[in-house]
Length: 260
Image (cartoon, rainbow, N blue to C red; front, side):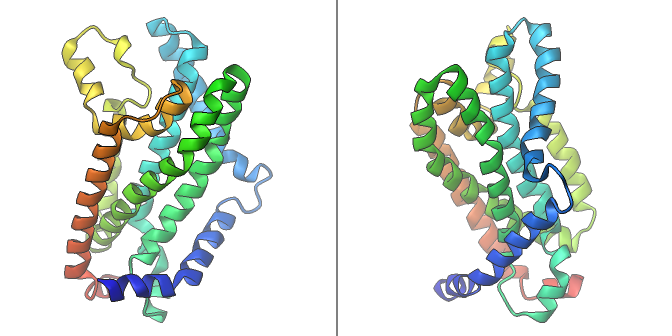
């Protein structure tokens, strides 16, 4: 394992170059460029706020940042899962040419998603600066922890989805449907005070994604630190995902080349 991690580190200039190239290519010849990482969730936020905010009678100034904070975290998770599916497929030429650990290609995907998240979250800081500057400091102080936690969750997700999708090409389509279902069950835009049913409230409060979104919402919306339960859940989930990723790659890494 130590030798494997060392080989990943030795290839750092390669996967950093790949991540930088993908980020540049993503917005090549676009006049707005990186601003699209803010514009896309913001337009969706406005739509959801207009419809659900009026439907449930929630003030836009309270609901809009709640929705936006959920959207940028969800986009990261979606990018890790769905983007991870393609990370090995699009790297076929590199994989056949260089003998690097295959996990660096999902790593490239997560680095791009992390950079996208960091750009998008600037809109949250701007909102806080305008509406409630007192929450700016908790947001800034917890941002490095939030980024590390998201990275730790995202990388094993991308490793697992990339290795499965390379062998079973329908997996990406099935996963997209599953993620769409989870989207409607997640606390991305639903709040507990929208419902009267204890069962629906419990579904939101005990939803695993709630703990992940609390990394952003607790400091930036409520001015507090994420709870120990949030951190415990996230670290526990990350540990489980890494064990699964290690088990998966130890079994199939040497044979995945035959599925291109």
